[in-house]
Image (cartoon, rainbow, N blue to C red; front, top):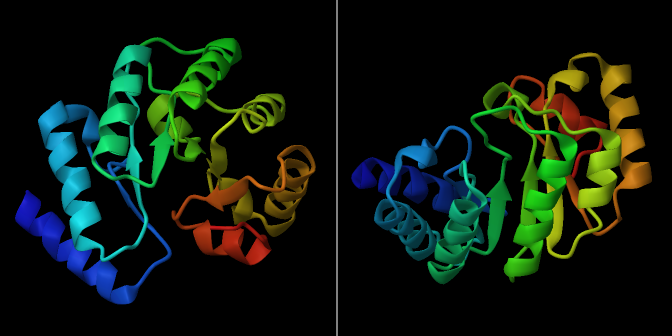
Length: 188
């Protein structure tokens, strides 16, 4: 529904956010064809008046992730959002190798997207430490649930800050705990 998306983008652009993300977890991007994905990204880039656009690139197959990354960059995306999507549960080595391969093939920052409700995968601190040292990893996005209890969320953020390079932003889900995550010190 490109007209509805255009209306949403107009409202976002008027608010002048730091960035806009299309085809995230609620964007239903896995159901779009490559041409539809390209339309979505191009519309966002054209309509957001210079605001950086991040695009979700997750897919079941690594070759599809790489094709999505290429398409998104060609369509003008400034950053990529990658959740490790799979039919069967993934292990840490498989997830690391996915990000390793993507980081070698892209020229824009990648946001590591932890969304266990959708992917059935939870990142360990060790995996975050390894992935965030790869080239082009610019951010991680963590679930907001730990921030439901202030001390637990703050402790989680302190642990992550001790293992994630300073140049990698730590973002929090915009769910009901997102505000608490931001108040605790998440970057976005």
